[in-house]
Image (cartoon, rainbow, N blue to C red; front, side, top):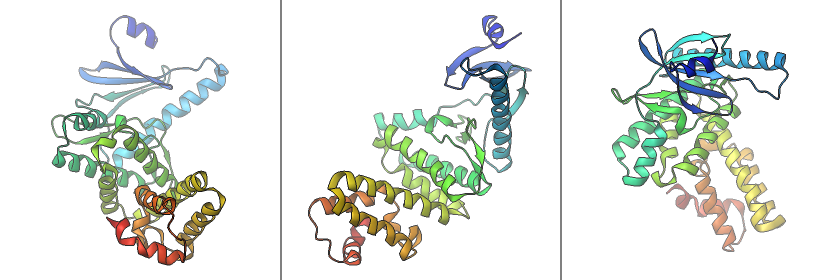
Length: 291
């Protein structure tokens, strides 16, 4: 019996479907469960498709299990079916963080709960990264809050992989930042709170934050070129080089670690500030950037 037959007889109820998999609600030996099925891609050669699907299925199972060993709350993995290409997980009773934050945006922020959620997110990601595991798809849709305990649960390790590179960890955080800015901008500085919790929980935060800052500066160098042309762009390259020349990074120049701070620099340049000495300009606005 394949997944389609099980769905037809009512044993599985489709919850959602993505590009790579379908998620069903089911029952596993008397327990409420979730079945995630990786379906085949018709455009791929059948042999290649079967190998890739099985490889990704096993990788997701391993990464979910590793995350749990690292102390991160994930759904319990009940079963791996290599024939139907499905994983059976514990059903987590509770809303997605996405829904909680959207509710904050509509009805007003509950600061205490927002702080708790941000702290749990930062601590969970820090555990993953310090353990050499990259989630790969850190969005608020892949984070649940248990109704009973208010505990954060990370789900969907389908794009996860192992890495100790600060660049990979920084990209993980950047993906989360983009998701928060695009979906939950009305909730304020959620990412700042998450990064504060990450820094407190991680032993390797410095290298990761430096890479995150370098990426932000590079992004704004490109934006500066688009807005101001070559002359202004040359100045942004100098700013970018200074991060390396003086070994600044985030530790010695925390006012450059957030895109909104770099945005302030863009505004001052756009308003016609004299370039003068680079150091004079940066120190002149340092206090302002820190606020």
